[in-house]
Image 1 (cartoon, one colour):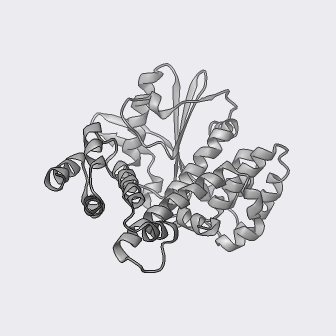
Image 2 (tube, helix red, strand yellow):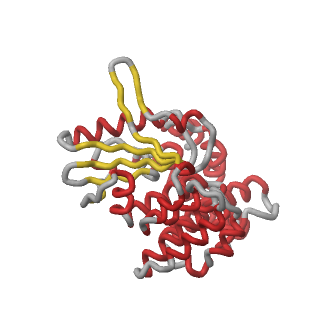
Image 3 (cartoon, helix red, strand yellow):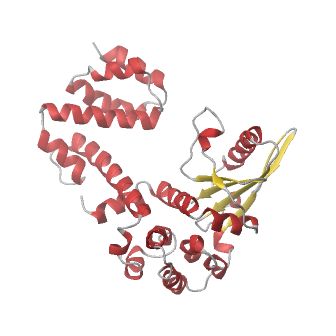
Length: 324
C-alpha cells in the first residue's frame, strides 16, 4: 500500500485520532513551549502518565499532563466538541487532586476545528453540590502571530486567526526550517502537514511542505502506520464480504491470495482479536483460549457477528452458542 493511500486512511477513516495524537506528541516534545503559552510563565515540568491517576483504563490519545513543583497542567486537544467534555474534565480534576492535593491544577481544552457549536463555549461542569471550571481555547480566535513565538506552537499557526491561511503556513514553515535541531525541525513540519488539513487543501499543503522532509518525522510515521492499520482492517472486511471485487488494497489482497490456506485462518484470527480488543477492551484469558480453537468457518461467522457486540457478555454468549 502506498504512502499516499495510507495517509488518506489515517486522515479520513481515523481523522480525529490523528489530529489529537499529533497535538499530544507536540506537547510531549515541546512541553515548555506549551506550558509557557497556556500558563504565561515557564515551569520546569515532567510528563505525568495518565495511568498514574487511576487503575481504571482511561482514554489518553488526546491529553497531556505536565507536572511542576507547584502546578499540574492538564491539556485536552479536541478536533470537534463533545457533550462529555465537562464531565471528563471534572473526573480528571478529582483524580489529579487525589494524586497531588497540594498542587494548583490548571485545565485547558483546546478546540482545533472552527465551529459555531455552543459546546465550544462551555467552560464549566455543574451538578447539584459540585462546580468546576476550566479554560477553553478556540484556536481560530488566537492571533496567528502569537502562535509563532515558540517552535512547539508553529504547527498551530495556520489554525489561528489570520486573513490568509496559506501565507501564514508559508511563514510558519519558513520559521520551522530555521530550527537547528534536525529532529525537532522534522517533527514540527510533520505536525504542520497534518494540522494544516483542518483549514487548507491537502494538495496545497503538499506544495508548501515537501513529503521527503516529513518522512523523517516520528509524527508522520506514526500517522502513516495508523493509516496502514486501518487500511488493512477495512480492506480485510471488504475482501471477506465482497469476494473478488477490486479494491481495499492490502487487506483484500491478503484474503484473496491466501484463500483457504492455513495462513488465512491465522490471519483472520489475528484481525478478529484486534477488533474485539478495540470494541470490548480487555478480554479474559479463558475467552481468548476458546477463540484460538475456532475453525476458519467459525472465525468468519465471528467476524460478522462481532460488529454487533457491545460487551464481553455478547462474545461469551456467541462462543457458547457457536463454538463446540
